[in-house]
Amino acid sequence: MTTAARLVGWCVVLLGICATTGDGHYLDSYYCGQDNCYELLGVSRESTKQEIAKSYRQLARKYHPDLHHGPEQKQAAEESFKRIATAYEVLKDEESRNDYNYLLDNPQAYYAHFYRYYRRKAKIDVRLVIVVTISIISCIQYVTRWQRYDTAIKYFMSLPKYRNKAMEMINQSNGGGGGGGGSGKQGRIKLSKAEQRKEHDEQIRKVIENNMDIQGAYAKPEIKDILWIQLFLLPYTVGRYLWWAGRWVWKFTLLKQPYGREEQLYLIRRYMRLTAVQFDAIEPETVEQFLRQQLWIKSNYDRWKVEQENEKKKQMADNPRYKAYRRYMKNHGPGRLTFEE
Image (tube, rainbow, N blue to C red; front, side, top):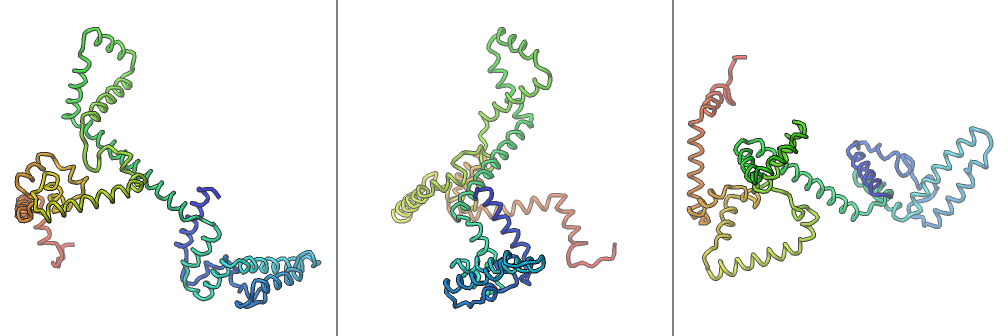
């Protein structure tokens, strides 16, 4: 079975689970349907495999369609033969028989029956499912990061500040001599306006990509950031973290050494509850201000946080939109009964 077929099988399983109802009729098309497989073969749950096989052979000879004459008798025998064959297929295999016994003992375990049935039918290797899932996530992750990066580049290209700066750099690089400029002009004459604009945008984009250091969620994606590579490097990452944690305890907890710049930034980021990507997106001037204020010291950070919250409240109080919102909530918000409408 191909990978695509296995994925389709899992999709069918999920759709079937979503379509299940509480009355259990969704299992009518599985195993022996509404019939009891043991009763169809005339055996009990304590019967051995040999007894089940013997009973099946006897019933197969009795209901074989070739042994009956007449359309109605032949059709009835054929239907009975199919039910007997289906019951034997369920009970002859030990794993299938255990799943069917579980169905008889736990008739309301809908999801478990569905999973057990298709796990055995599709023969899906869990390892393959994990590999395919990780691969899909990695592809989506990489494509999404490229889309974000492309969005950031297009945004900077649309800003006059960065566009004009890129144009200056392009003119400086092309302003070597009159002969070179003339040949470039002659080359551009052969292009249409749309082609010239496209070439012009490509040059600006290249300059911005080479000179713009985009950080955070819109940074240029790297192969090492995708899930597959991260899982491959997981032992190294764990080992590096353990070494870092041990070094931290030894130097700063036991020996009481002063924090370096890297440790100071880590403490500030941890107090702010920001990820490394979010913290890297902060402007360098702001980060330097954090260091000058010594925010890696918890008391300094708590005081700074209170000041920031008070400043934010003051700005919101002076904001005309926020004032209008407060007036609306006072007159029409929750807890006030009006008859204006």
